[in-house]
Image: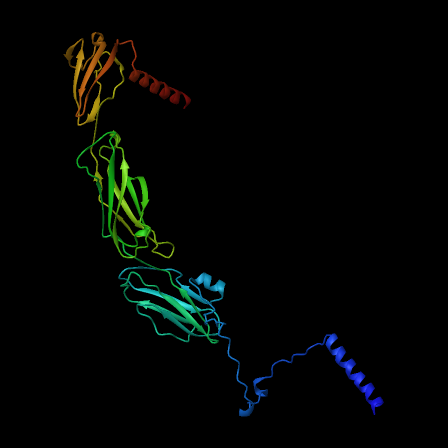
Length: 372
């Protein structure tokens, strides 16, 4: 009996030893289909073990979230908005369409505080507003998938209003300006929105002097009044010039084809300057010609001519005796100036600058006729 059991014991020892020292491949069958699973009997029901209190279960998060149509495609949210940015004038109607680009989503809806449409099971849903009456709304389109996931897309919205009035004036100044002085133009834009999209341009005649944008960094939605300023230094050429400013709302490619523009009335400037001597300090005339020399200024200066200390009138028919030095005394509004003019009167054989011009024109005419 003892001798017959010893080989069996040795065989079992070898089998258990090889099981612990050699790797064993494990076969995991695929889960059975639902039709192949029998409902468990009450006596064989196994309760699942509860998670440890130290472990936290993450909450459910919507798997697909987006903020714009383009990024929605990138993260897998198949929603598309048309237009991609809605630009609407306050008080006017507005329409936007949201569509889902692939199957697998059972519900489509808009979340918006103004005229929200009922959710639909169709592939698109239009949000329509008869009259845009709010400045700060944030429309959002969402879709629910058949597996319970959700994605949404925000519609960028710009509600605008052209200014009620645009005016131009000088800061702390009325009346005429003086040449070389420092002055400040002021353009006032009343009740415009959004002010972040406002561009103001100052003009002198048809020449743009400068362009400015609002310095307000906050994203204001409602209409505000904004003031823009520009420093200028007028010259005598600016006397009689017209200054004005233009307010334009730049609303981007989704905005109106012609951006809203409001122009101010024109402000005619009066610039005081002078006196200024216009004629050359060395004046050559021919006998019989009038002797004239212009002195300009605004207002027109009072001009007095002197020769050898005596007040004289400039001759209308000059002769050789009128040659010499003349002094011009010009009294303007701000100052008076003295100018010295040396006059040379040539006899009949002499030439002046005007005579030279006439001779040159005659030679050109002769040359043209000869070539013909």
